[in-house]
Length: 135
Image (tube, rainbow, N blue to C red; front, side, top):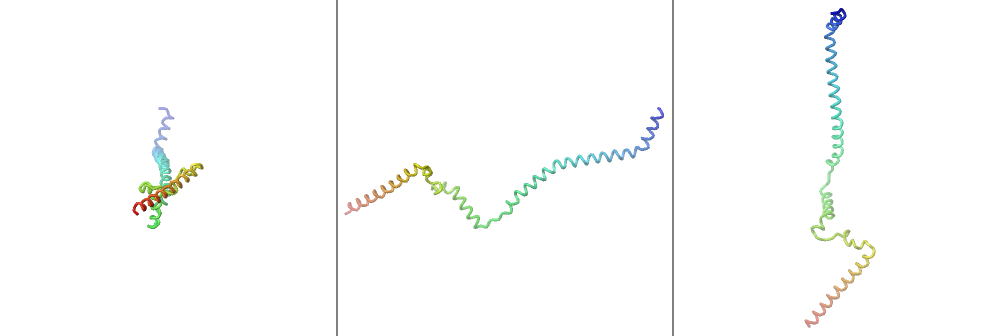
């Protein structure tokens, strides 16, 4: 071997422990930084999601309704959504949707008035006939 190689080898041998410590610290530092980056990549979005979830659901969990308020709400909800299904009745707000157009309103009102007057006159005739027949 040439003298240069021998000197270089002796210098490496002399500083070998020092160089190994530097390499070990460098590997640990790189592993720590990689773990930190991966943890941040997973933790930040997950933390934001948890925080937003807690903020949106916190109000829903803290709501308190007394029994009278709940009964009033439930009764109104039932009337709005289900009462016509079970009773077969039409609500006043839903009634006569034909009347909303201009021409049919007057026609349907007149027809309803005529039907009402005819019904009462027929009843009166039946009553008078029944009264005359029994006499």
